[in-house]
Image (cartoon, rainbow, N blue to C red; front, side, top):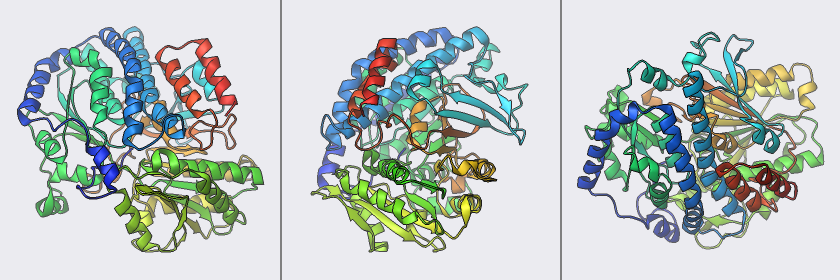
Length: 590
């Protein structure tokens, strides 16, 4: 969930840059080489380690992760210039320890099921959709989810070559190979993201347990404290010889990516980082990319950002509906101060919808109420200035202090504009745009919006569709919605909610739409999280209520967001009905 590698020194606010750069010194090449030698020595043993032995490691790692959680949140809010006790702290608990603990718990469950049944058991039975594609429900994962996320669901559409009869063989391929005595050890380099504390740890978990490779995790200079967290939280995996942590920036990453001990690479960052690894840097790299000549032959998976659309389907909205969705959309920008690859970037509306302006006014009202935040991610102020220079009519909200950015809305962008920065560049700061398509009615609009997102917006990671339940009862609209969900070229489509939800659920595979060539990688290739170990997922579809009750804790203004977030972390670490009741009670008071 990141825009990419930090900007060079001097880009962005001085206070944020100084905070982001504090941390361990870059690991020396001698020490990185030693770490790789240690991993090479353990890779074959890891590849053949029995699933139940891995469960033991995961359960011990859950304990150490819970113990390290508070320090991680302290480090994160300190580095981001946030205050204890507010919405920003709640976000750090949810996007950090909660997501990691959930990932660990559900991975352990899957490995137990592999040992017992040969493959993980999804919560829903796989079935064929109208197009003959295999679809499987992956959320809610258990009764805790059914209580906490009432009305929410998630399904995964599998690749065309997956059949109902062969579904089980399309799960946990590394463990099928293990049973056939065909498992071979590999060393993977994981280049961590700089914006969300759980990304690097969860990328490492996926590579360790889904791809069956030992991992060298290089931290990001924008959040080097993640390394301290991993060394403490993942101590059992480090002690088992499956994981090592090193530190540094682009130079260290480039050296490691070319190291002969590295067999595969996973990067969460920018398309520029991906291209530098695959084709090389500078003019020579640009020439190699233009010619399609790879300089790095290793398999590379990646998650590389997105200009994330929120497609708003016209419908019979009440004032309460407008207020709720104004809050939903504003929250999708404000989360993590706008430094998410799935932050709201382009609101797509119908120019013929009579409530278009009213919805924008609801968004404006919420942005005006939201406290501004530090522009802590390197290069944020420069990016914001570039977008505002292209659109001097941009509206600013809030009272931004030095080192902060105002919430910014660029409304009424021409959908036919060529080389539009708001469509082709990820702002990765506190800014989003709005555009309106000349389409009459929800059916025509959904078809037009699908074409617009696929053809005009950069990225293939995640998209949101907001649709009123009354609209779905109109002739043809439900079919048009399904057509849009199927047609949108994104790895995740979320109905009515912020795509960050799909990121955190972990049973939901997370990555860009498959099929992008290396020369036009967009949001990347491959899926992570995916605790059910689906080998060939193609698209995750999450659905939630249009007007959810209780209010989601990631929405702005939730009165008990921190209580809910901390309660969810405790519940994931050590589930109990008493803890569940405590979270529900806090949520109802939000």
